Image (cartoon, rainbow, N blue to C red; front, side, top):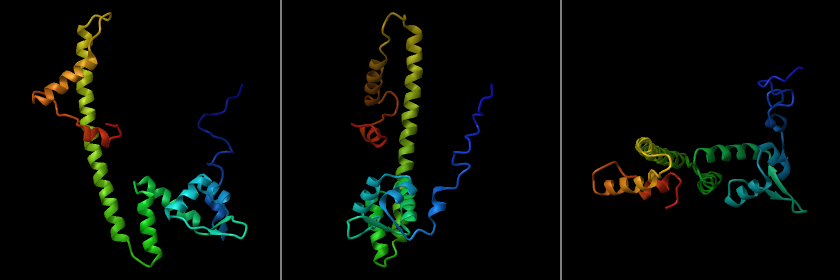
Length: 187
């Protein structure tokens, strides 16, 4: 019995096919469905981009959206900027300034620097959280080793006790509400 190799995805994979953008390099205008498919996003995403001012569409007499030929590269730019942490509102403001003849390069750079600063702050908070989790796990391992399996070890209660010690200044650095909120937890 022959089995297909796991590392060979077959001729239907992207490895053997051209990239989606190659077929559309000379596109003059786009309908919403074709643009969405070429970009790998939904029609609703493109409509949302329009509402936020990062993508423009003309309307035909029958009401269909018609995007310019550069819409594919515009959506790709937006997607990459979103991955870097820019918001659609920020991008809309910057693109509007560009379209009005302004040069927002320094503002774009300042926005990116602020995003880097925020990421570095989040990383520091995550390191504190990681260290706190390591300490808690070590403490819990010791508690579990000393506790009969049929008895509760009071692991969560130990967290409250460690927090009380932090407040009294006798133990570990605290992960405050500000830090938890920053890394995705709700207060």
